[in-house]
Length: 560
Image 1: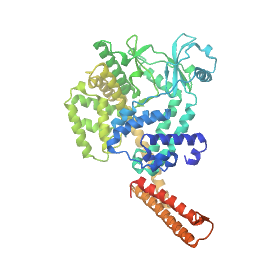
Image 2: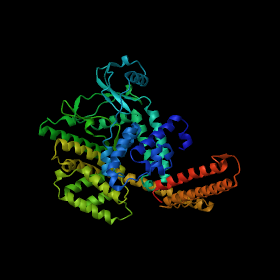
Image 3: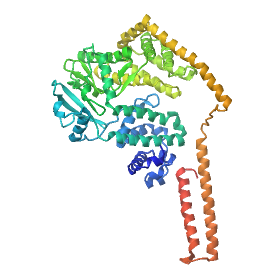
């Protein structure tokens, strides 16, 4: 998106200025200056020299980014929450800070909610609900939830309603964010490694799925099918006939949030902890599909002591191959086999298959040796994944996002469980699930599926190879084969040369104005102002303004 498209409406330009000024407010004006948008921020921030974030300020900057996202509203809050799942690119203190992002918006009116519900259901509300509470029982930046009772079967339900106008608001912010991301990639080459545009494309897809409640309904229904034979875990039923893109009607689960069970006995807390971790291991090892937002507010303890899971906007997936590798990783903890841990970490895609990295190997072995001395009940699998992710990031190794998300989810679940039972043994709880998966993967049926998939992959490669080679030779013959060279690290030099050239050009202009004005003044040509020739006075004035502008620019850059 270019500035012309951005500026089609006054509201968009106004929002851009608002975003840039909030950036500057929290100390990130140096970014605004470097992407050449300083004209949109306050005069004081434009004149003062922008300060780069020092390494010693990094913890403070994480806190500022969280506050900045909360001030800028729903799009930025959701973006921050998505980034809190990206331990593959962000340090742990950023993850922790962004995990604390909270919505702070007022509920929208009941009248607006009724209009949206009626539009989605397609019939009068009194025909569907015998009760629909006016006051929402929960409210967030993108939606709010009302308690209701269905008329046809007297079932208690919750009605999730999308906030009116939120889709347009988010699309507007996404346009602006894409514009800023492209400028960052152009002017801040050191940030290209994070692929800002690619990250935004991923975020755009994720938030658009969240704006369409049919995705969440499908997630809930699939996870419910996983536990259809289990009495210890309850997933709310979805009433598809009353739901749509902006409204979702689900079964109401009557229970208390798991964080409020402090008065329960030690035995009962251990039982709840076992049910919760087993539920996640069942999802991971048996289906490779798991609920990815297990914070304490989304886990309920029901009256029959079953656990209920709610909020299915975020889910994770693992391939059979990655489940197998994760299973071996869990079993290696039981065996205290450090070599398997390092190798599995490599196989999961975090360490490049092609490149050896002795530095990573040494640090990882040292880290795992520490865990080898731990009692099993002191090991948190999610925390191990986080530590290894941070180490991989230190050595610029590629990371498997699905596996990192699993680590984040397990880390959150384990934190909840530690609050229930500080001595809980996560590795021991995982062992039977991992062994079951390994045994199943060794069955003839599973081996046959693996062989078939490998054969199909090889067949596709061999079938396409002649065509691919032919395409290469055709391009060579036509002279269309292009080799792209990317220079690294020259952008700052080019920027400095460009800026120095501009200053030199302005200096010549100022010099010319001074010389010309002096000649006019000496000759006494033209009308006079304060006994000075007017044309000479104007020339001196313009030269003075340009000179002050150059001086301020030099002082602000810190390079005299």
